[in-house]
Each structure stands twice: as structure tokens, then as C-alpha cells.
Image 1: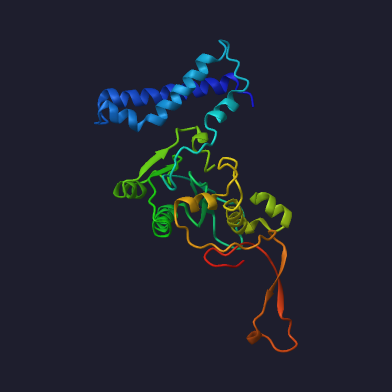
Image 2: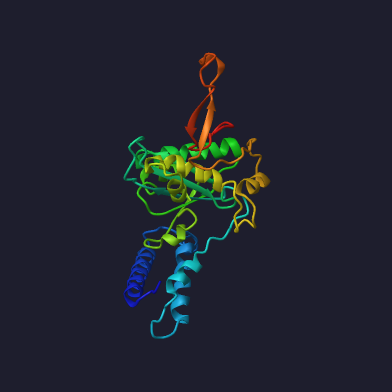
Length: 191
Length: 96
């Protein structure tokens, strides 16, 4: 797939916008963290921008990124980055489906363990069931495998970024990582 | 994988939850290249004590199966099995 100039400029605009948002937050001191905490919190984002920056600077001066999309895919090629089961769990929701005449299921919720690539599927009738199912999954892992999920990675969907989920993450000391907007490749394992 | 199963078996697409569950079951038992050609269940067993999972011989999604009818539910000249279609594996017990 050819990464033409329009796609490229859109990408760059998005990048600069997000980056300026982050920097503004930092400079205004709204975050209330030290610089080290801030860097840790946004490490994935910063690393991603750095890779894009390298990609842009190392490419020929006239924008000729014929294999640009492929390079972006290669940047997020699924690799196993943890060495313990359930340290990192990927998740995504699929749906709604168009035809569900014999049952009422509209969505399915997918959990993938990064270490073992073990997959669990939960079927949902509404997206609002996601917190319940996630809680059930968390309890199931704890009971059956004696492990606790440490890092939970998903996209920015409203089913993951909401009050009840965030409260659950805070109470159980889970780290929630979300992908950057418009870059679903960061959540590639679950996709 | 799910799409291929649904088309090959020529089942209505309304059976997608069964197909998705079946493909998840199979993917957990198929080797991955990123796992150095081991299956997710094998990798998981190295880290945790997984509950005993009975391995069943896999079946083709949508194939014809004959389900046994218990003796209590039939008389002498009734058929002892019923023809059905395979749509997946049981989640919490050994069975189809």
C-alpha cells in the first residue's frame, strides 16, 4: 500500500497535535507529576514518536514512502515482550454484528495473554457488559491460574475508558495502556 | 478462520458465536510461529498449573455427527442415535 502525501501530512498533523497536547500539559503543570513520572507514563507514546521521527528523517528528502505502511506495520510487528504469563493482556471488542437472528449476541470481547497467546472469548449482548466480563475474567485468571493481570492493553474505546473500568484498575493496581489515536497497530495482537 | 469455517460448512452466519468460540478453541491448541512453534496451552503449562484439560480429537466445523440417545429415552425399535451438526466444543467439560 502506498503511503501518499495526503496520508503522510495527516499523520504528521496528528503527531504534532498530540505532541503539543502532551507538552502543553507538561508545561502548564496540570499533570502534577515530576518529569520522570511523566516520561514513564508516556513512554510508549514518546517511543512511538521517536520511531516515526527516525522514519521520517531517514527516508529520502522528497516524500517517497512507497513502503511506508509496511514500515509502520513492521514497527508494530507482534513480538513477545514479557516473560511471565498474564503480565500483559491485550483486549478488544468486535461488533456489532448485522445478523443475529437465533441469538441476541451482538459483540464479542477478546482477551489475549501476551506471553502464551492464549485466547479467551466472551460474548456480549451490549457493550455495557464489558466491565462485568472483565471482572469475571480477572477472577477466573486469579482462581484457575493463581496469577494476576498486571498490565491491560486496549484501544481507546469507550467500553474500556470509562469510570467503572478506571476505578477497577485503580483499586486493583492494574496498569491500563491504550493505543495512540488512529494507530490501531499498537493494539495489533488483539486486532 | 471463523469466516472460512462458516463458508466451508455452509451454516447461516447467525451461528458466528459458535464459530468464533471454535476458532478460539483451535487457536489455543495450534502452534504459533512467535512461540517457537509451540501451542499456547503448552506455553501456559510451563508457567502455571493449568487445570487438567482433556484433549478431544478435533472435528470439522459443521460436519454431521450422531448423538447417542440414552436407553431410558427410547424403546426397542427407536433409533439409538440422532443426526446433528457439529458446532463447537464444550467450555467447562469434556465434550462437543
